Length: 489
Image 1 (cartoon, rainbow, N blue to C red):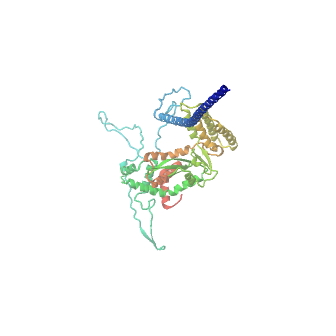
Image 2 (cartoon, rainbow, N blue to C red):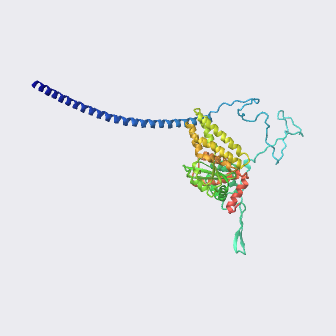
Image 3 (cartoon, one colour):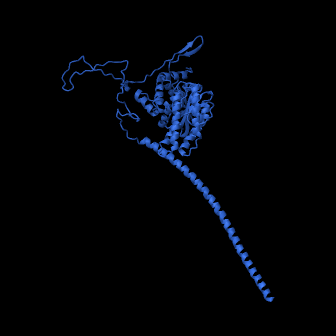
């Protein structure tokens, strides 16, 4: 009994020790488990952070890749401007799709300068002695004819200075003094109308800087006039041509089809914007501080909802209350730039081909007589093709860029189908804004707000006269005199 009791006590002690050891071991395991749990949570947070960083790096990589593609496009464009491929002459009997070489082609009928319809003077030229041996020569009835068209020698063109002796007369009926008004004379001006007209031609037709114009007046006519005086004359001319300028705007607002374009312009070193609004017969320039949508809303206010504005893809025109035709030249040009890129995607090539086909169909229909029923059918078909382009799930970055442009313009690409006499491109506006762009390159912009206003008004009138195929000098003279006297044309 005693031995058995001792055995039980020993077993109990052993179990107690084992339980104590197990509790210690369990405590250490729990502590380790808690430590590993905290470490796991920390690692999971780090993994999530790395995932976000990886996603951001991928986005940044995509942005850099797209930026690199743009730089490559610019590089290729500038390379094409500077380094021209060597041209290869093409034999006349060679028939291929290669473009013709420059210049007259074989078999082309030549054209020379025609003789003037009127000859002002005749001169007979002969020799009294032989130029080789100095032998006296007899006169001859055999002659050769040579006609020369020239301008008068500059040193013979002298200014005409006129003093008007204006009589102070008395009217016995009105019982007041009256004075005559010299015809075609600018009131209170020391310079005549011909000088003002010539200044307009040199400044806005030839785009000659004012300092050079002052030199031309001195060397050609002997008239000394400072650059500041010329600026003052141009400011006065702006006021005289103001009614003509306002009539241009009225005509543009009333026109059923009008164009608009804009470009940068500097005023006293501050970035501004030059706007051009025009029809086929007149152009209205205005230089503003902003490129905001408020400018076209102000200029084209009063236009009818049925009028059509032909414009580029700038969003500032979208809210104007009139129909709009987006220019096809811009998306086609951008599409062409994507296609000529060596890294162009197959998707982009197919998309470019579709756009060219659509434009070809549109251009062919625009050149035909207007038939609304036929054009509505074509409109429905082409709108479906554009919708297909917009809904296509493109993957390549180049095709996505062009798809986005087509999506933004949408149905405004097809307005010309449903309205007569509407072109598919805004080339007219780009051509008529170019004279102002050339002036900007020469002068760098305007020095003041008044100078910008003067340039916009005078240039609008000058270019409108040219667009109407009117004679520059008589039309300018008449317009200035009408502005001075307050008469309307």
